[in-house]
Every structure is written in structure tokens, then in C-alpha cells.
Amino acid sequence: MNSTLFIEKAYIDGKFVHSEKTFPVINPATLLPLGHVPDLTVKDCQTAINAAENAWKQWQKTTIGERTTLVRKIFELINEYKTELAEIMTKECGKPLTESLVEVDYANSYMEWYAEEGKRTYGETIPALKEGTRLLTIKQGVGVVAAITPWNFPLAMITRKIAPALVAGCTVILKPASQTPFSAIALARLTEIAGLPKGVLNIITSTDSNGIGNELASNPAIRKISFTGSTKVGSILMQQAAGTIKRVSMELGGNAPFIVFDDADIDEAVKGAIAGKFRNAGQTCVAVNRFYVQRSIYQEFAQKLSAEVSKLRVGNGMENNIQVGPLINVKGLDKVKQHVADAVEKGAKIAFGGNPIKDLFFEPTILTDVSHDALIAKEETFGPVCALFPFETEEEAIRLANDTPFGLAAYFYSTNIYRCQRVSEQIESGMVGINTGMVSNASAPFGGVKQSGLGREGSSHGLSEYLEVKYLCFGT
Ligand code: SIN
Image (cartoon, rainbow, N blue to C red; front, side, top):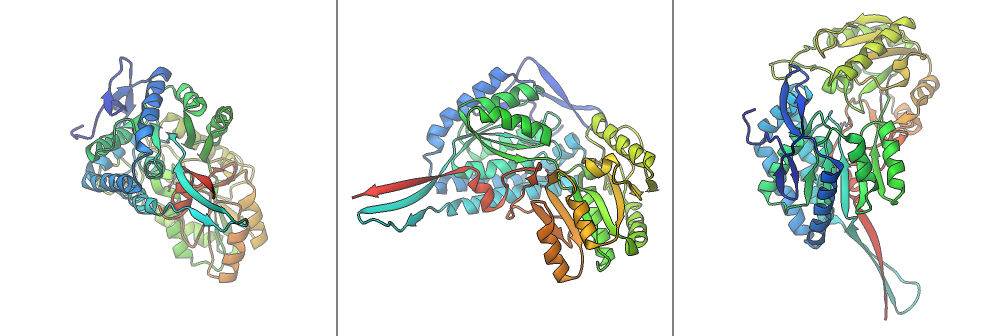
């Protein structure tokens, strides 16, 4: 690839490093190798942890002014290299180029927001009950941080972790998904140009996810681990982290409901459904998985949604006017096929699509009259499939929406303000979109309840995850 940011190396202690063993990164749209990166080992990971620990000694002493200025500089460089970053992203994860450009802006909004918010890591003065004492709190970075990020947002899931970590005074070892390491490495190059000291950010590329994950979760030098990915892996990492009482942030799987009440603006709900479902071909943790539509408007909603879905063009995201790219790999495609086949077997009708196209592409699909027993009602599909279920009453809609061990995002449409208040308070999820299909925002807390995770990313809450509160008691 013809870009100065396209680097086929990992990044440890301020150096781009090779290794004898490498692995290919496949472009999911063409199935051709995009490039190769080092297949690093647990030993290499320990080298990176040592580098981050050494770098932390100095980095924690820098002022908030120095750190936020550097993060701001990285923000400016990301803007400057936006097109190159977006092209790398589309080629490694398949999302349409227009969407990658939006993701670069979204990713960068975390750099900008934390470069500002870092300056407000205030402590407190606490009125003392006894004479002769003064009580204060200060906030300090937790120390060396491990970040493990997924392939579906190759840049934004990184900046959402490293921007607050860096301004808090933490150093980072980042393990990006093996499917999408090039966006991470490109970012490392920009941090190098910005002048981030060596060892403050380290990138481990590896196919040994279990070994590296275990090392990052259990190594005592690491004080915190932040993971975005599946609930299954999150639970394993939490168990591994328990041995050293590490702080954990877990942004895990979802099974988002999208309720359309009979008092909704149906055209707006259709727009929200497209945004909430088809971003990255349905491969997002906040993607709508279950559409609950009130019986009296069910047919109308299904028809209008089918009309919009039929306009979506599927293809290689580097071509013009493509809205839906490929699934990330065969495993992802097989899951989509399985969910559609299982739903149909259990009585669902195909209102639109329903078939694989070729290679990793799958038709945008609408299933109606889906059984509540179908797999698609219970598990994240992570693909471009809308499953529609009718409901009768508000109580039923809330019960169905909450009938899952997950609780990341939920959405509903209604024009009744009282209903909006009632329903938003009763839905069991960390984020609720009310008359919108998009909730992600750097200044808002992103995260889940139940088995969708622990902790929040973005906003001042996301910064607190990287800070310890230290209490200072002054005697006279
Ligand atoms: C995710 O799918 O994990 C993140 C989506 C987002 O930040 O909008």
C-alpha cells in the first residue's frame, strides 16, 4: 500500500520492530493479503511491559499541560492524515470508505475531548471535623495499562482507551485485533511524529491472543486492563486479572432491542433503524439485533424498512457509493447464515434478502414474524440482518427488550414524552437511544450493564477509569 503510515512492524519502546515469524492481514473485500505483521510472542509482550513500566517513571511526572498538548498534537496529525488512515481501515476491515472517514473523525473526537478534559482532573478539599487537620484528594494515573481492542472499529476503540490513559499519565501496551493491526501501527507512527516519549505507547501484533491476553491480564506490572470484545473473552480476562487485583474495564457483547411504538414517527424510526443496524454491515456491539414493532404499525414499518434496505449497495468499500461491506471473515459469515437459517426454520419469513452473495458478502436482510426462540433473538448476529417481532403493549415490549443477559445499547421510538421517560427508565441497558439509532459520542459515557460489561468509556467517567483518588491527610 502506498502510504507512509502503512508499516508492517510492531512498535515497542519507541522502535518499529520486526520478528522472524509474521502473519498475513487479509482484506475481507478481496480476500487478498494486505500485508504482514510480526507474530510476537509472550516474551516480546514482556519486553513491551518492561518498556512501559520504565517509561511510566518519567511520564507520570510530566505535567497535565505537557500531556494534553501532546494528545492535541496527535489529534492534529490524525486530521492531517485522515484519508490515509481511512484507506488503511477500509482495506483491513472492509467498511466502506465513507464510513472509515467518519470513524477517523469519531476516533479523533476522543483525542480532542480528552486533550481538553484532562485539564479538569480536579481533586477536592474536604472540611475537616477535627481541628488541626487538612484533608485533600488528588488524582493520579493508575500506572501501566493494557488495552485489547477489536477489529470492528480499528481506530476508535483504540483512541477511546489511549486518549484518557495518556492524559491521566498512564503508559500503554496495546494489543489490536490480529485482523486489523495496521490502523493501530499507523497511529503509533503519528504518536512518534508528535513526539510521544518512547515506551509510553507500545503495540503488540500477534495471533497468540490467548497467551498475550493472559500475560497482559496477569502480569503484576500492569495496573489496569481495558478490553473491548466478547463477553466470553472478557470473563476469562477478568478471572486472569483477579490474581493481581487489577482494575478492569470491560466493553462486551450486546443484543440491542429497537422498539417502535404506535405513536412513533415511522419514517424517522426507519432512518434510525438503518443507522443503528447497517453501520459496519451490522458488526458493532451497539447494532440493533431485535426490532420490536407494535402490531398496528408492524406491516407499515416492515414495508418502509424493506424499501430503504433495498437501496443499500453491497460491495468493496473502496468503490464509490457502497453502503454495506463484507463480513470480517468466514466465521462471521457462517454465524449470519446460521442465524438466518435457524430463524426461517422456526417460522420466520424473509421480507428482503436472506442470501450470501459471494465470498464474505451477505445480502442486507429483513426477517419478519421471527420466533422468540430463534438464535437471533438471543445472540448478537453481528451482520446485516434485521429480525422483526410484533408486540401488543408497552409492558410486553419492555419485558421482551429486557429478556436477555446483555444490556449495552437499546433504542426506542415514540412521540409521547411520558412514555419516553417511563420506558427509558425501565430498559436495562447502559445506553438508551430515544428517537435515535446512534448513541456513540466522545462526551457521553459508553458502556453496558449485566453481561455487557463494567465501567464506562468516553466522557469524564472514561477518564476516571484511569485515575486513582489519593487522600492526603495533613496534621499540624
Ligand atoms: C462497538 O461496537 O464496540 C463500538 C461502537 C461505537 O463506539 O459506536
